[in-house]
Image (cartoon, rainbow, N blue to C red; front, top):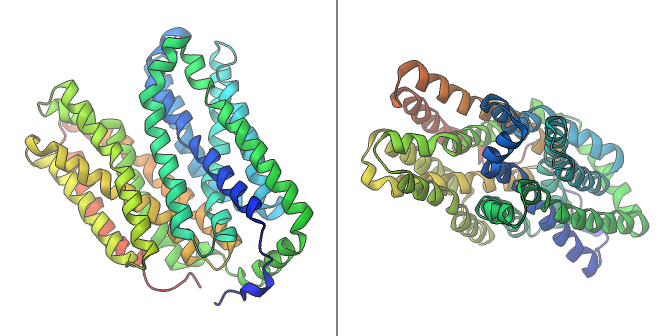
Length: 406
């Protein structure tokens, strides 16, 4: 199905385009930071609120559950009130959630704030690719790479500076300070909403008409959408499993706490070079299939190395797994925009992929922990991860077929 000619699309002003990029970056800063930052200070939260480890674990699981259960709703909301308005609301809710969970030393505030910010992040997860498709159809790889890079790097920064921020005052300050960024994001998206409503009413009406003509078939009925969703989901399962258990696995295999921490850091830091490489590769017309399969293979290599090969090369297994995860996550964001026919279909595909993907990802830490406790070792969980990574090599091939959704 062909896209409509570009002649019907008014060219946004330079200031408007720059503000969209700024708004995307400001939103991206807080798409992972409140979640990763909480993990860094969870022991302080647990002590101050007198919570059990199980309760802290429940708080930590809320974002993934929210992503899995609410992502399919985001496209429906955006179709009713518009992409830009929905992301403005998401930015406001994100700020309220960040501030709400630290407003008082109370479990209810922590719980409700976490739920609120998780729902807001879920909206952003789904709709940012649609915004990129709408305003940057010729620079998808560049803008998506910028968004993914900001998201990944700031997640690492939030973990790295958490205790420094705590030293200034307390853990509430460390978590709440990120809310200022969401306030700035709210103003940026408000500017975009006002300009869209004032100057681009015809553009919005035209794109809505195109969407009605093109999106007669739900993406949930398209095999390609399922390939992309499962491809993303298995990668997410690996990422969250390693984020949860990699230090414990390495320590059990004989590394010191410091060594295990360093290896885990390599895994996170690989997001930067992998995203930069992918952005340049796609921007120069490189094969999506080649990069997807390569990333899946190095994911498999990393898992096999962690589970069954020498600890002396743990840094290599970490680099391999981190490179694969960074490539696949960003590549999936690009596939949302490249394979879809318009911004509305992009939002629908993004919502489906993230709903299915995070539903799959939830089982990674759960099954790994259960198999570890049941067997008393890491052999079974690492065998399961190895099989899943091998299967994902096939989905890498299927998700990058040279055709659009419909």
